[in-house]
Length: 462
Ligand code: GLY
Ligand code: MN
Ligand code: MN
Image: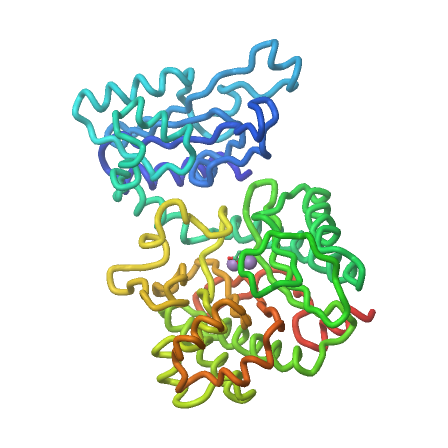
């Protein structure tokens, strides 16, 4: 948590940019896993955290852009709650901690929103993603749940995105902390992997370290011998000699800033020649992608540049062929690289994804591609100083995708399906780092984690 004046300054800027109307910011509540009193790990809403820093369930806030008044809503614990949960800071103590002068009981919040609506004022709210908050907006504003996303305030979304996109020095320090934890997780997983160990045991190592360092997983860990399944959360396999392990996991700090790192390494101490060849291509694309990051460059172009490096490497192995500029322009590389090069990261691992990627990742002049693969690119817009983003190319051999494209003879001028057949069962390689855009270029955040073939093998054998 930062000092009160950080939150005060953020709210003042928000009030100024939204200029008029009533801003509603909803915190999150506990959510029961199988019954109410057995909840999931509590995670505060990231925008609420950004402007208020408070991590308790059941808070909300109104920011009046006409009067400048900010009010925090919540309820103090009663003695019965304290018996079970221990004492918590009172609402007033919490408000003082983050520079807010006005507080009121939570029930008051809905009444004030309703009164504002009845008085004909504009009520600004963000697209909700939790049903409890959708229910409240429906009760207070009479907007059906299915219409809330489209009726969310574009003015508010744009003002929040503008602020949260540019990371301050103190935010970058939190992200460095997240990456220090993330590094410890990756090192321990790499050290712990050997034939006979299970993916679940590696996932336990990763999560245990995050918890032990006062963090949490920033997202469910991908720790798998089936790295070609992009968001694979299955941990049911034992590692076998000759396989690759893909580990895509990161910590979020106690203040909820995320790290998002991927490393791919052999179960054995060394890569096979075939694994090494594919790995080197992905690494080259990652390094070229990172190198290209600087203010003013469109990330969509960085994505294409990395795709081009992948295509060149794949062509050198005989997997792709023909005019590679044309192949990449048409999207043939997406057989092997069917996702985007990266995304913004901050308080969310996919930062502000709840607010809408058209606002976060694209602009008036740069629109999302509808081409398979590049369509999944979450960030395409021009980079600005203070953005933090991921660079995460990969090469995957996805049997179902290969079979379909081959049956359709799709891009057969650019893909040698006979050669591709030799890689069936290869699985996948991804390498991912987190990068801050600086005035003169970029800085890779976090302490280094073994990445070159030599570093990975030395660490695996050391
Ligand atoms: N960890 C999910 C991603 O890299 O986007
Ligand atoms: Mn990742
Ligand atoms: Mn990522």
